[in-house]
Length: 283
Image 1 (cartoon, rainbow, N blue to C red):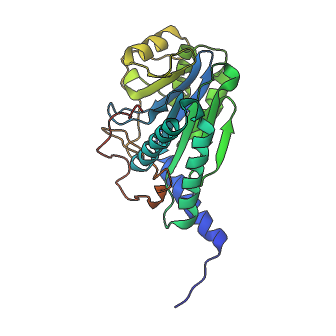
Image 2 (cartoon, one colour):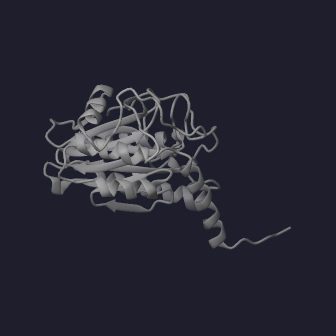
Image 3 (cartoon, rainbow, N blue to C red):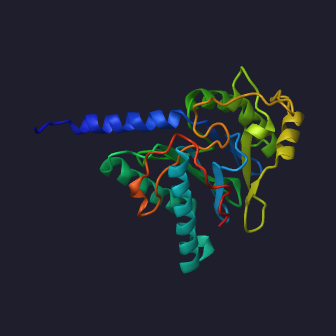
């Protein structure tokens, strides 16, 4: 029996579905600081990464379904490597990468049965602060050019409100890290170093600007900043059980395919935990 559903209703249902999946994931913050761009995510897993290197001065971060955004990460690394090899390393930039991701996500959102349950971020650090770029790409391919900070994932609105009040683009990486952890934790809990994944795109680095922050560096940052009450060994916090990867590997879902073939979108994994993937590829 034939039936009819208005296109507006179809798009609304897909958007609701994608937002619901993303909201189950833990949040992530990217922010400009005096020495580069800091990326900080709540993530208790020691092996599954939300934040990764894509190319020399470009980083990637994702929230949502881990398997889906990890496919996008891998495609981004391939895209950047191919372009850098075919032309020159200077021709690889965050804007073209964000455009490629937007096309892939938009294609899946409008043509596939199931949209990707992800939000991703592409950041590029410039040699001067004015050259820093942060692109926030939504599940439907919408690209937002963020001037100085971005918050992705569940509860993003409340976290953005807290972080905006504490963020200063002229502050050091350590100060911005403490502010980001305070915003991610909220007023009722604190996060320990083991529950956080953090990396920085170092403006003054050599060719490769991406560097992960160790637990010791995160603990030292917390200890040195009044903004974060954080006890060094506080284990608490926490993660909602049904979040993405939860328990052991934080995971988050991730998006599907990045590149041209991204479309397919694997869809179903049990929310969060995907076995695989330990570290980023470090292109």
